[in-house]
Image (tube, one colour):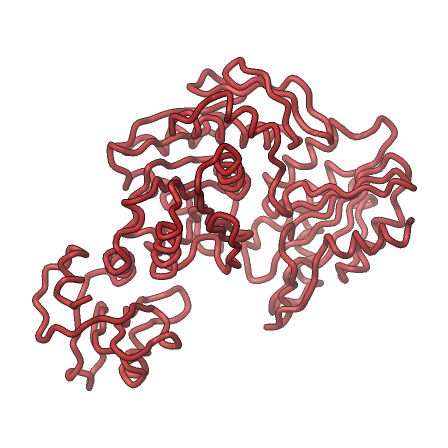
Length: 484
């Protein structure tokens, strides 16, 4: 594609000094090839403008950026006000504006994004639609699985992935939209057919600085929607209506507790699943917990706004299961112990899971929770996580999550700081996560539930710059194989 055509399609009003054919676009110098455009973006930790010379040496013929370092005047430079915003728009134009040819639905919020996006993907596949998924766990083009590196990929990768989905004939794409992605303009250049807000609780304050900045990042998603899209928000969360304040999109609500356009009601709730009413239509589900009832209501609402057949949707909902690492349930049939692996890594998510388990556990059963907090992340939530685990469990084992470069013992100490003296007797500290899971298994007896929280689908542990193989589920499976 000629540079002039690409700039025009991206809405950048600039006449280039010469008009080369652009063979590819990237924001990563390691991917630069002959004839490439390199977009220099200021990131949280590095500034892409520092690597412009390296990009040129690797074959870049055009540089897009906010400034050009001294001594590089010979290159074709396209100056823009915001490189991150420009990257999305240019990439969209380069890949043929793929989001214009499919219905792309974004899901944002602190908790529930993966579940809602994945269930929508599964439901539409079951009723016969070609569908794509972009999520924390994995990306999918129909049945093809593409490993996920971020909740929301960078702008160029995202547009390339959407182009592949469009080429595969996908009619719908369901994607998680993280606050980091919104703050960094990774969704620039996308046209959304709809957006869903799940909830907003304490998370990522290490990045956003404070809760208000976090809220504004989420709200930006809805502020940027046009009148052809729909905005579906959870009004059980006080921030649901805030998300709708400045959007041009058509406004809709869902709720378990209030009047709403899409109303869910729990009739039965146990480890086997839920019996619910959705707008007075009864449906059996294979997901458990009030938080999942809310997620299901969001999925139902979105499918109705997409004008899908209600009976087909309800039938599909009765068949789907939770995504990997979200209330994964394994049972020791000999000892009659239930193990649950869940991604809950925020105070609210942990409370939601534990509250559900308290309600549905056996009369004499105990809840034993294995939990940690990630290193180099929001430190404010550590004592809160510790308190929630101790208060809502019969026994809690504090252990490592992804300590990264931090001392695990420091993280565990900060978690313990949130536990009042009268609850400390319920807490063990076992810094080695494998040992912690084995300890929980040994402490458990008939009718007990062992919750292993925080990592969910992750099959690795980040320790001192190394990505080590580690999978909570595999450890539990090994324990179960020894119990047979």
